[in-house]
Amino acid sequence: MRELEGKVALITGAARNIGRAIALELAAGGAAVMGVGLSDEAGLSEMVAAVEAEGGRAAAQLADVTKPDSVRAAVEATLKQFGRLDILVNNAAIRGEVAFADMTLAQWHQVLGVILDGPFLCSQAALGALTASGAGAIINIGGLTAYTGARQRAHVVTAKAGLDGLTKALAQELAEREITVNLVSPGLIGTVRGGHSAAEPDHHKRHHTLVGRRGTPQEVAAMVRYLAGPNGRYLTGQTMHVNGGAYLP
Image 1: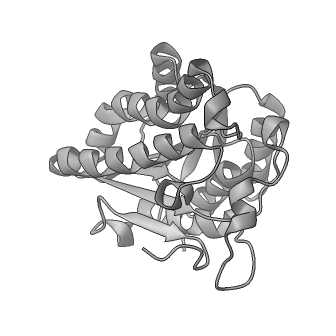
Image 2: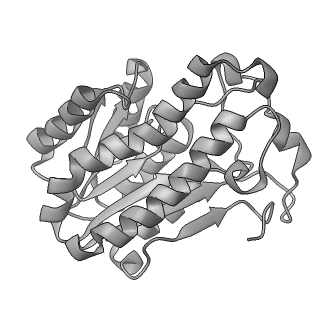
């Protein structure tokens, strides 16, 4: 199926892991994709090459999702490259673990800036183009710990929980513009971690799936593709849990 033929998607945090899988999956559905990342030019280039190797269309743009001018430039680059924007996937995130007693205000603001301010700025910058689409979709990528809590992740838990609230608020406001807004909440997904998050997170050790394995980025991407496509148009304001039964709402 190429149910997304003629559509254009902008995906933040698209250089690797879940973001890259989403880019490849939406491209497989026929969408042209603009992958956005903060600094991983090599990862973005590899994503573009992987999409093009399968006959799809892709481009990449460096942008800081916490900076309004940078976000607007990414949206403008998408429109210049592909002529429209139909799907926005707010996937960019930073994590890390630090005890609450030791957490600095700068660390708190850094995480909330990417996970919560980023989707606010990206959704606002893309609003005109998504409205013009006539079938726009905003898909936010949340996380398991927003619903279960987690040790040493007060900043991440708070930001992801706030993203759930933003999803519901925007679904209410943007329905009249024919824009659906949903959240995909992955849990216990096997990803390649680097930097300060190289070690397996503490909450991964404390949760277990009913299906007996970790999920894959591709399984998260499949849900995003569904919500972005024509069969997902009756879903808005929803949280879709992709966690193998690690959390049952």
